[in-house]
Length: 282
Image (cartoon, rainbow, N blue to C red; front, top):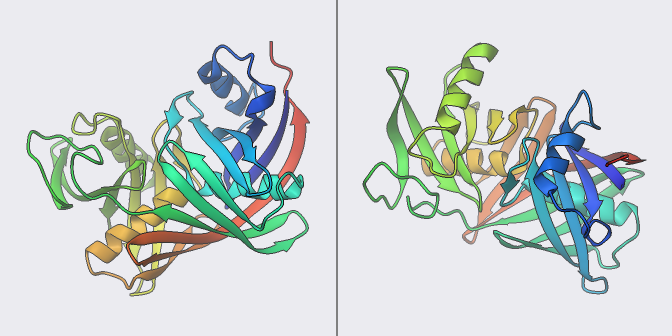
């Protein structure tokens, strides 16, 4: 089974051509096996892409987390998929339109240096209502900003939103010890108020133009970066009037830029082709 591996600031993905995997009966099982870092290839997620219109750059996109669950969307995943398509010369225009379960998302190449791409992706309109996220504590909310969430007898003010997938922002003055924020992330991810589980961002505001973020991804755990998570962190910072509408997002392995303009969110960042291989599946 031919695949290509791509990463964006350490958030890594394996990409398969959906047209060549139609005989698969259990995609979730495959995702768990191929993403395993000890007995598989190793990745945060598995992407399936299928070209629907080569001339127009229309591409179907699906993403599965390392635990085998299917997610709605991924900012880094979309940019990685676009980089793989251009690297393999499988599409013609400089702009791709991805067809995802969260809606259509445009992505274009800004720059290319060999196997390293800089791309800009449209991440859609943030959804802030509790039903759209979803968030359910028995009440309905138009926005959820600084909601007092209780975790292990401690209150965490959280800001919650959706970018096609659900996100929970936790602002801190300093980052907790790794074992501590892992535990907090794990508890929030599976909290009963989040019926579809949730991604968590731990955020330090450095200035009006820059934030630093740690990511706990639903179905994965800690990731070195997250495209949709970076966007959610920026949107949460803007909602709380902590930053301007163009924000540099510092991750463990580098920087992304997020802009919230004319209702939609845009993200610019790198994607690097790592290698191609053949997974010897059953």
